Image 1 (cartoon, one colour):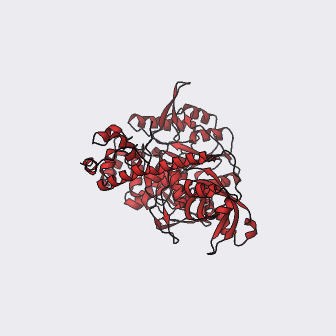
Image 2 (tube, one colour):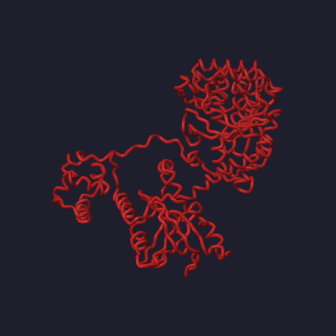
Image 3 (cartoon, one colour):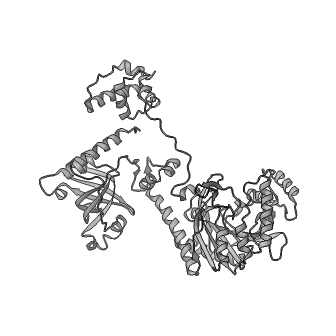
Amino acid sequence: MSIALSEQEIIRRESLQKLRELGINPYPAEAFDVTAWAQDINDNFEANPDKYKQVVIAGRIMTRRIMGSASFAEIQDSTGRVQIYIKRDDICPGEDKTLYNTVFKKLLDIGDYVGIKGYVFLTQTGEISVHTEELIVLSKSLKPLPVVKREDDGTIHDGFTDPEMRYRQRYVDLTVNPEYKNIFINRSKVISSMRNYFNAQGWMEVETPILQPVHGGAAARPFATHHNTLDMGLFLRIANELYLKRLIVAGFDGVYEFGKMFRNEGMDRTHNPEFTAMEIYVAYKDYIWMMAMVEECLETVAKAVHGIPVVHVGQHEINFAGPYEKLSMYDSILKYTGIDVSAMDEEGLRKVCADLAIEVDASMGKGKLIDEIFSAKVEHNLIQPTYITDYPIEMTPLAKKHRTKDGLVERFELFVNGKEIANAYSELNDPIDQRERLEEQLILAGRGDDEAMAMDDDFLRALEYGMPPTSGLGIGIDRLVMLMTNQSTIQEVLFFPQMRPEKKAKAPSIEDFTNIGVPAEWVPVLNKMGFNTVEELKAGNPNKVFNDLGGMRKKLKLDITMPVKETVMAWFE
C-alpha cells in the first residue's frame, strides 16, 4: 500500500537515509543515561552552578537558530525546555566537521530526539544554556510537528487547537501544547492521594473481573461480547459492585478498586463509553458514616492537587471542606419546582413530566420518572458539594430500605457543579428482599427498559451465606478530575477519549489526474507538491502551480517535458 507523502516528509526520509550513509544509526538501541532535566536546570542552576558542571540531557529539538560555526537550539524534555549552545569545533574537535556542518545543520529537524552532554553556563545575555560537548542522534522524526509560536508573554500563534485533532493525536498535542500535561499530572495526584487515604485506613485494593456473565451493579446498557472457547456470551462490566460485595461476604472488612467501566450509551461533554470509577465497600458502616468519610477524602484530594480545599471551577469557587449540604430527593424537587412528588403514583408523575415539558417514554417506571424530573429541574442548581439523600425504592434496587421512612432507601449521591460525582448506599444485605428487587427489574426490562438490571443468581447465593452491614461508594474519577483541573469536557481529562472513525484521505490515483489531462509522469511531482487528489489540485492557484512545476523539475533534475502554461490552465477548468 502506497503512502502519500508531503514534501517535508520526503525530505526527512531523504535525511534519514543520508544519516545511515554517514554511519549514524538514527534509532540506536543503546541506553542513554540522562542526569539532568530542563526544569531543574532552569530553576536551580544560578543558585548552585557547581552541580551542573557536567550534565547529560535528552529531548526533542523544538527550535533552532543556525549561525555559521555556532548555533542555538531548544531541547524539550518531560519537564520543559532548555536552551543548548552548539559550537562546531567543540562537537567536532578534529578535521572532520560533518557532525556539525552536515548532521546538525542539514539533516536534523524540529522534532528529532537528541542527547546532549556538556555543562551549563550563562550566555552574554544572561540566558541559562547547556554548552554542548557531545551530540548524539537518538530518534529521527519523519513527520513535521505543527509549528506553534510562543511569545515571551505567553501569547500563542498558530496553535494546535482543533479539539478533534488534539484528542485523536494526543502524542502531538502534548508535545506542542505541553501545558496540558498538568491535567494528567493532577489526574495522577487525584488517584494516588485517594489510594493513599484508603490504604491508611487499612482497606485493601483488589481487582475484579472486567468480563462478566451478568451485567449487574448499575442501571446501564452494556457492551456484549462472546468467549469462543467457552462458547458463552459475556459483557464488559458496567460496574464492579457485585463482585466487591462478594469479597465483603468472604470476610474482608474494606475493599476498593480503581477500574475501567464500560457503558454502551451516549457520548457528550461528561460521558465517555469507557470511564474510570472507584468503588469501595466497608463492613459495619452505613451511608451516614460514608458521608463523613467522603468529605474527609475529597478534602484530602483537593489539598493534594491545590494545597487548599478550595478549587476554581469555571466562575465558581468550590469548597471541598465539609460538612456538605444535605437535601432529600423529594425535598430537592420541591425546592426547585415547587411540586411535592413524594406521594404520587406513576400516572401522577407522568402528568408532572408533561407539565414540565420533560420527555419520557412508556418503558419508564416510577423511579425513572422521578429521576428525569430531578435531572431536568434540580441537578444544574447544585454547585457547591451537596448530598441528595433518601431515594425512592424504585430507583435503587441494591440499597437497603430506609430505617424510618417507608418507600425510601438509604442512598445518597454527591453533586458538585451541577454534576453527580459520587453514589453511595447502606448496602442491601437481605437476600430475600434483594431477589424481589431484581425480579422487579426484570419486569422493567420486559417493558423495554434496556438499562434495567439483570438477575445475578450467584450474587444472591453469596448474600444467602450472609453479608455484614456494609456501606458502599462509587466515585466517577474522570468527573472528579474535571473538577480538580477546571475542565468543562471529559475528553480533556482522558489521554485517549473515544472518537468516531477517522476519515482517511483518499489515496492518490494516477488515473484521476490523467483524466483531467495531467501527463502521468507529472502526477508524482504534483503529489510531492502536496496535491494528493484532483480536488486539492483544483483548489490551488493555477499560476502558482505552473511556476512550482518548473521549480520542482529543476530541483529534482527531472528529464521530462515541461507542460506549457495553457495545458496546466486546462487542468483547472
